[in-house]
Length: 83
Image (cartoon, rainbow, N blue to C red; front, side, top):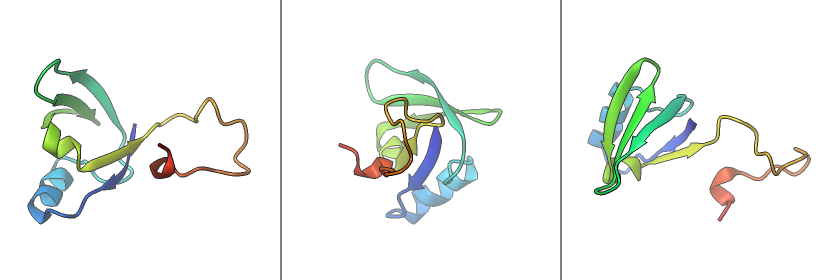
């Protein structure tokens, strides 16, 4: 996944996310999702980080691979516009 956008509503959270490399354009992988409590383990480059649900909600990601349903980029759809 690629970080597309990070909410700037909370300056402290924005600084924290920046300090761990969760910035627009960063490549990350989901390592694990805890079955309860909204806890996500992500890998950013060589670092693994555990994020709570509130932190994760501040991050918009998109697939790092092309959408297999789209066959043409003639009419691209921005991922934040998808339902």
